[in-house]
Length: 269
Image 1 (cartoon, rainbow, N blue to C red):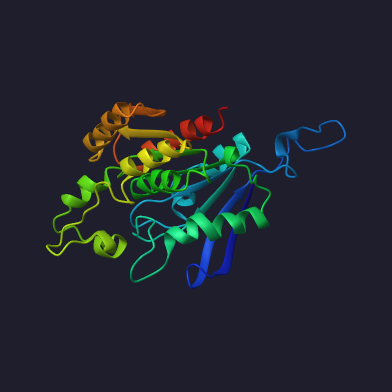
Image 2: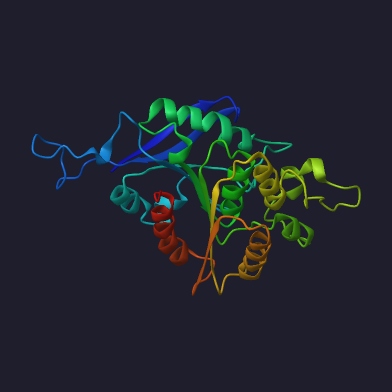
């Protein structure tokens, strides 16, 4: 496995950004020789790629610090791309960086130009946890032309309800991320908006192009009930999605376990 820390100047972000990219390479026990010409590492055709999103207070190094993503990706022959998004909910901020534009336009173009990844939608995925779980579904459903599958763990997917109940939460700058649905009384009209995964799913379904969806949540997670609500809504919509619940909380023990299941699910035909 080759881990590359990439620094480059981003037009979308208006400054320098740092990426971490894992690219699977033949190990000592599977070197490409005259005796072993396995096509597991088909760099010419392009490897499958997953854009792996972090949660609140995370960055491009979160998955490297706290999980075994490098080993899991190496074993499965998939490229992993990790970039920072602050606490933005992966939006173009009113005052700040344009994260949505970066993740859906500039970053995929850059990665496809520099690394041996497939340009085929069927081999392009997005996944994340917590805020990044929302981000994965949001990016996947708002740009279903880019991603074949989107996976969430402990996801803040029901953004409308969470935003309505945010109270004095200062973890996120909600007004900066969702400024165009901010009402005069300070509430956020997120339900049915372009930020609402439920509404985005309906639009994608109308167009006949919907990514397959995955969600996992621990029973001791503070977002467990919220995830159960998402499950109910998606079942009512007859959505093609996988839901997994298990013992566990909102922590890396759960995410490190279930990213393995997600990678297997992503690579299923």
